[in-house]
Length: 100
Image (cartoon, rainbow, N blue to C red; front, top):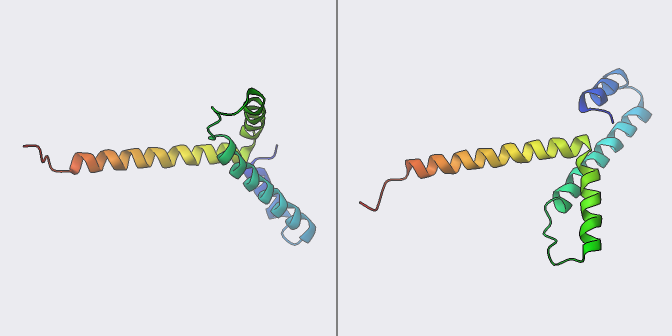
């Protein structure tokens, strides 16, 4: 699997080669698709689904989780949740105590 930096290096060396640039755009599109797919499958509630469906979704989700784009998605998602948590904590801390 090529890292984001490796793809950028390839891009820098081949900016004038339209075939390489087209291929890199396709790689980006597929990586975005993998991240979006994981965003749906990885957090889907499957409690009411048959065991076979749950196992298949888990299998595909585990495969997608190995993709660099999905790992970047998970890191960004965690950062966003952490920022939201800190913002809410600050807001609660700054609220005046109305119970007094």
